[in-house]
Length: 424
Image (cartoon, rainbow, N blue to C red; front, top):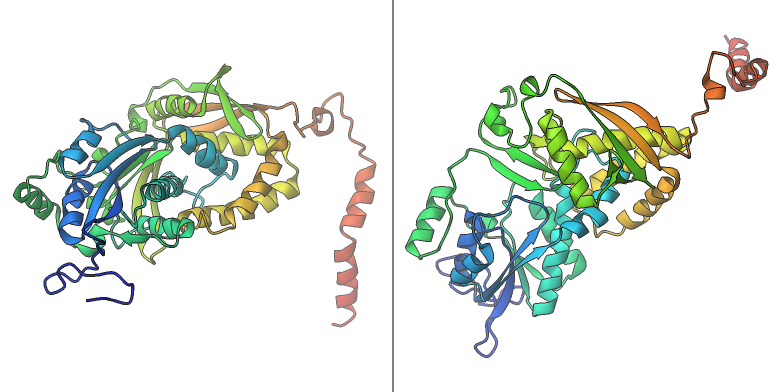
């Protein structure tokens, strides 16, 4: 039976799912966003069973922990006609992480967008593969209650509106136990990890955790929620000082040693995480209208954003900082809401990039038992003038000008007070 979308159901009587159309015996292709986990492993067979498609499994590396096996080989053994592992870590940092750092991106002033900022890159890579392979469909493992389904779906069609989306976890509402049984029944090779009550996502910029006891917003996160940071109570008793060098808003060195972006983030993650820095417990507003309690671990992100803001405070005029803060919030909302390809990100980023022209210098931070504190800053473009700010010898400020300045500054208020008093 043909439906309004112009594609066909394979088994309409038993399964209300739209099926792909075949042409002369050749099946259409679907590009699957593949992680090697349980959901996407069983999805390879499920897509072939429920849809008349061949599956191309694509894993995209944005800094998540490595798998215990060759997930590409396993995808092929599980029935994918092609599989690939794309290393996008350098692109992730240069084109997504650093722009978000320049924007001091903290959704609702708390969350560093660690998961959100990776989604447009993954969507971009999936579309590139789909276009190159002539695929008509892209599939992902997102659920119906999360933000990521929106980010992927909207990101994909905003790049190629002719692509259709298949979301097995939205259509096949099931449980972990049933998925494992499905894998056994169909001979699907899976790596079943120790069952955890939590749902996690990790990349270079941070990790997120939800579900389990975290669904009770009154309950303190238990110790097993935190995997990448030391308990602040058990962190070293001696503070750690680090000097972070920036060039035009981008961090380029730690303690004077120049590093590429990936190395710098990985190094700072370990150092800051070992001092308990980067733990976040947050109730946030999801795009789909649900309030969600999540924890995040973002040691490098939290440290770098604090340092970047401190450098901006020293090198940017007040009106630029104040105006930029509003732009930053709009940037965060666009990223979080999956509108990276909507047309507004680029002009916003152009403005932010212009503000970074003189955001160059070194920030010294102290890491101590879960806290990151800026304790020193210097810049060749510093707007801080000791001669103007000091109260000691060498004061260059013209104190006599203060009276005239205050008179002019307060003139509107003085005028209004006189006018209003006459009407009482």
